[in-house]
Each structure stands twice: as C-alpha cells, then as structure tokens.
Length: 170
Image (cartoon, rainbow, N blue to C red; front, side, top):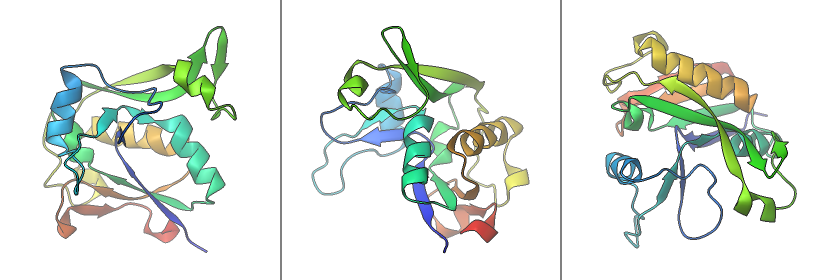
C-alpha cells in the first residue's frame, strides 16, 4: 500500500511548544510573508523554521510512508542559503533520532547542514530537470535524510506547478 506524506520545504507550527529550527528575525517574518503562513480561519501567524529532517524521518517511519510530497519549494527561491536540521544537541548529547522525552525538545539546539540558495524562481519548473542545481541538491538531501523517496514537489499553488518525481512510490 502506498502512503504519501505531505510536508513543506521548511517547517511551520501554530501556537506554543518546541520548534527547534525556528528562524530568527528578520528572516522569520520574511519567510512567513513569502509563504503566506497565517492560519486560514484565525489569521494567526504560523511559526516558521528550517526543514527538520529528524521529525520528518520519524513521521515517515511511524506512518510507513512510501513517498513524500514536498510543498512550497518556491518560498525558498530568494534565500541566499538554506538549512536542514540533521540532529539536536542537548547539553553534551547529540540526538539524530527523535527523542522519546519531549522535554528534551524544549532545550534542543538544532544541528544544521547549510546549502547555497538557488536565488532564482522555480515557479515555471515542470520537471525535476527544470529546477536549479542547488534546489535539486537540497531536495536530494531531504530525500536521503528522511529515508523516503520524494514523489512530488510543488513550486506554486496551481495544479500545473506540481512536479512528479518518483511517481511509482505515491
């Protein structure tokens, strides 16, 4: 059975609680505006962070995902660099797996891998090869880190802005 997980190319959260990869200002407000990250009903601003590979890999495993749909890649188009969280540091300990003790997340410092941004629009891409090399490198790392093949990537809100990657896994 196929099970597709849908995740953004970055992390968002509404409300309080741990978000280890939360962005600093002014980048936080910038990404929130670019991604229109406000609650549909309440208009509450969503908190935004770098992609958390630890959380997504855990979710993929627990839910038996056979593929990922990465949405909103285009929101990152203008950034000079992008980061992916590969683990957490809590005191002297490094966690590369999602901790069983959620209290650890409150104190977790993200461990990042940084990538050069592509700094060009991806919105006209209709196949993987149309994406800038730096965007493909970023996606390759997400796929590797999450241990789940990417089935789709969206580069805009329209239906024709969804790129099929590994459609056999969806």
